[in-house]
Length: 148
Figure 1 (cartoon, one colour):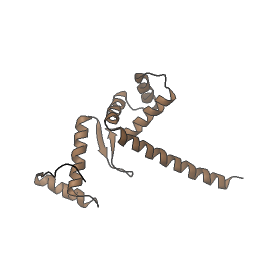
Figure 2 (figure 1 turned 60 degrees about the horizontal axis):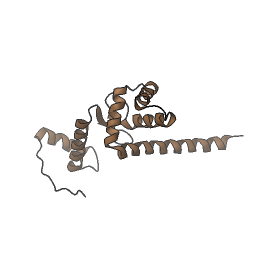
Figure 3 (figure 1 turned 30 degrees about the vertical axis):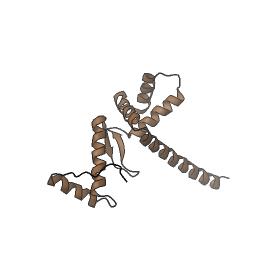
Figure 4 (figure 1 turned 180 degrees about the vertical axis):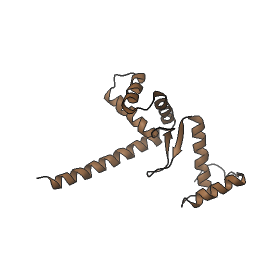
């Protein structure tokens, strides 16, 4: 339950109609929850130009405009930092740019977003790593069964 007082918001009829259509096509959502999500995302995009939000099989997440998910970039930065702990920040960014093809300015955008929402992005990374570990374990069991 929210700790803030309820707010009354009046939407233009066009916006209200689109919001109702969105809620109707997304079971489990309410007008309030959808409006809250979209206002939060709009404020985040205002604070972090270059970041937008996209739906996908794993849920709605922050992505770079014309680029990968923010969590993917941050995962690459963390991997580069772990592999090359002696590099300074600019060289880590250059390494990630070289390895991924993501321009340095977009990597900086992802880093700024992560700095504001580290728990959210780190949770996406942890979930991806868990899925990968599960898939590898499943593949290994298959290989063990088929081995001579």
